[in-house]
Length: 180
Image 1 (cartoon, rainbow, N blue to C red):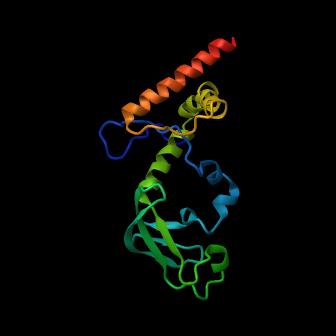
Image 2: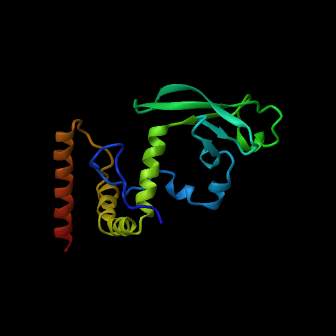
Image 3: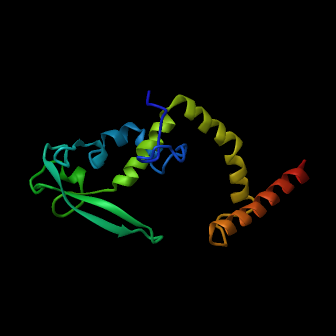
């Protein structure tokens, strides 16, 4: 079983624990995902050479660093890797849709965060806390989102968001009391 000590980066004191599954957590647990050769996560990584070894045994070497903005405007840093020569590779149709060599876009920060979240969720003690949270808390958020149609904050800045959510939580609690 994985260690239950997850920290946030190289900090001396962890600021927070990860108990939220990331978007692809459940999918990554499946046998199909673990055997899919498209996922560079399933390949062998050689840290000394900073390269991956593809399922056909060829090197996928580091080419460059690249920053990209996602649709919400957040800038992410990627390491771009590219395969040696994929032209005659028999696994290419299962591996990539790229016309040339197989590119791999690797977000090291995101992968580190996912590993920490996965480690926390695989810890028996923390998994029990997460299971309890789903029962106790998630139903309230589901009610607020579904029945009160609150899906997006209208205000910006943390102090204003606190006030706005305070009003939503107050309304939720009044509705609970009125319902009993």
